[in-house]
Length: 114
Length: 111
Image (tube, rainbow over all chains, first blue to last red):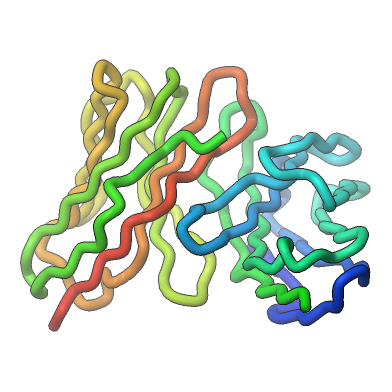
């Protein structure tokens, strides 16, 4: 099993551009989530999903959209990139949605917005 | 909002020594988890302790939980150079599908 796969690994955007960060998992996990990691801030939850067709906002959702059309995929869309969205983005999944069980993380996407 | 808050100091120890780091949180939890992150990589789950448990072991790791003080500690015994990483605690609250992470605690093990 590949686990959680994130693409791309690195991305540079100009302010105002849009893009989609891809996340796929092959563990049949119901729960998927997106975090951003900034120096000195730890990880902050952007959006999460407890199953196909269901998404909800986390701590810092503004400027991001998500959808969950399949169990496997959970893409994160930046609508109009801003320098404040420069960060490392992690996708994570877990088996049980009702009690957050151990998260499996991808290796991250490092995004720079100029 | 941020729940877990680790002691913010970076820790530098000699190989073979024990490393202890602490985490405090503010509200009632369902479980608390510890994760490790090596440089440039995603987080890796280490151990989960439920609110009705006081201590848990996994190999060289020992986690304690004191719900009365809303705190947890992670002990790594007989540290190795490969233990050099950042360690995060994360809390899950009842009726909540979220896992809230602390800011992390960097540990450097000197060979």
